Image (tube, rainbow, N blue to C red):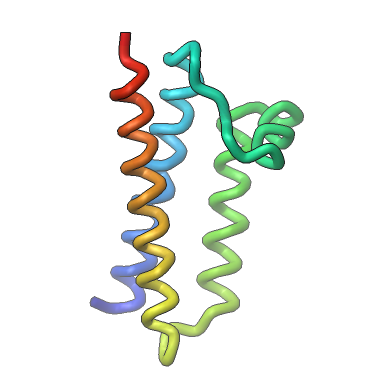
Amino acid sequence: MTLHDIHWLLIILSVLDVLTTVYALRNRSNVSEGNPIMAALMGKLGVTPALVLLKVVGLGALFYLMPYEGNEEGYWVAVAVMVAIVLNNFYVIRKTAK
């Protein structure tokens, strides 16, 4: 898999994270953001803008600061973390369904 492919995979996973988080927070009355810093940012900017800002800054920093050559494992760790986050979001949505 090329660096370009991994970048797109991380972007897709980030979009899924934003979409599932927004869905859970807006459609499940007993769901709240677990990260206190993110919750505070959401309180100031709104849910979607805060999440998008976090993803743009985080992915931008990763793509710009971490070269791919010699760091392939680091990119795969980022993919694994994002997969775990998205799966957790789906779990929370399913668990809190009415």
